[in-house]
Image 1 (cartoon, rainbow, N blue to C red):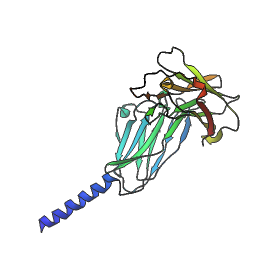
Image 2 (cartoon, rainbow, N blue to C red):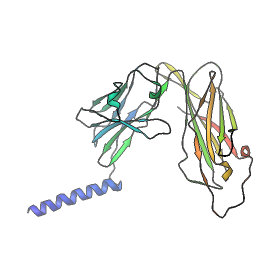
Image 3 (spheres, helix red, strand yellow):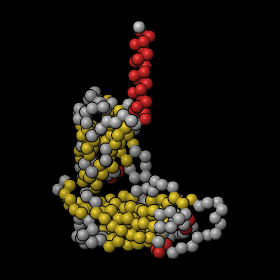
Length: 278
């Protein structure tokens, strides 16, 4: 009798783990984060995270700086009320998290320059983790330029679209967006295209009593060749300052049998565009 009971327990656990690992057992995780918060240097900010109360083992906060791996700030076993800090965040005396049944809010005091990055709230259940959309913490009065990496492997003849997100506070005067490329063997980056700002290109919204402008600029290229490889930068000139993006690296693979060098005027194949983002 005991052997039969043990067999059914083992079978149930095996099926459960199979379904979870195979992704066929679906469950919904609700995670809400503010997409953007504005704060001043030296001030304090609360970054809220609300989440569902079902199918959760652990709740986590991650800090993500552009070009670096996400860094775990802290986690909490759901329902325990206790918070375990990681990576030295417990020694700063500036990061504090309040764990509630349906929220996991992060407070940062005495904001420093390197605190103005993106923060992700996440929940885990069994062997799966679900991330929120992330909260960008913007330095009041400054402009943030974000570039997304190209995830696909590129080959000669392919097409690609580069994106540049510009998040800034409204100030007097217009701004200009530049695209340029830096490649090995060339000492000076070459400007590819310039966007002039127009009032109908960007959307405004209110965040923490501040007017925020958010725009997405795209640059598309067709029929890639090896000469197009390099790091592409988006730069924004506004309010008397120049703000540089983190860069997007293009690596173009070439079949070994291709020996003839490519020559092409770069501006003939690039197609710029701009759109609004809320």
